[in-house]
Length: 217
Image (cartoon, rainbow, N blue to C red; front, side, top):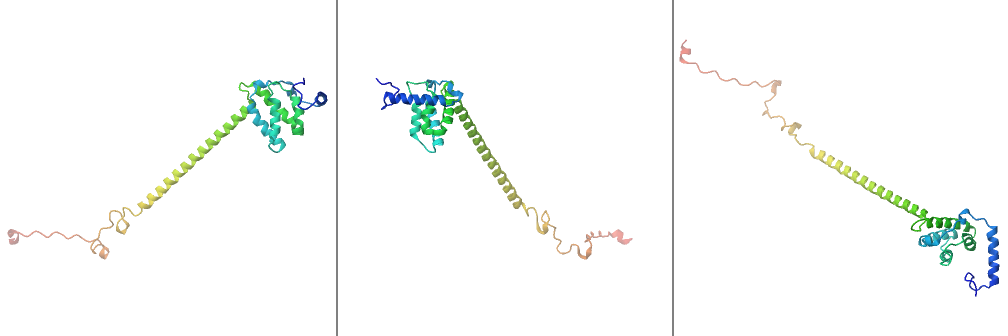
């Protein structure tokens, strides 16, 4: 009976030759120290890892490649192997990602190591990115509210200034009579006042009539 790890359609000799080539590659390649740490995928939420893989593959390949994404996820989501070998993963992905494979695998493995330490199986990097996103969103809301309030204050000041100017315009000319003096203007003198350059003298009262006794003296 063929081993379950064999690729479908390959013989035992072909699989051995593949394994020998893989072993030679493993011995000749240098890997980061993170690859010496194991990851238990049962503790990792792969649902949050998949979008990252899809985005990263698009950045490296230059287009959306669902085949590569599915292949990478297949290397992780294997119920028979919950502790994948990152070195073998890198070799298997090299045919797709070529020279970008080492940086891709280093970043992916670091995220997986973080995720297995988190209670929800989410990389701490993702948590911090979400916090930063929320912080920027709040700052944007605060700026928007501040700008709205500033505009409202400016509108209020403009309205107040317009009201004051209108009030001053209505008050012009009020409280003045003819001649431009308050209290209805200068009293009329029927044409006699100030003639001759002097003041008008008041008429004196007539002398009282003389009595008979006074006349006989």
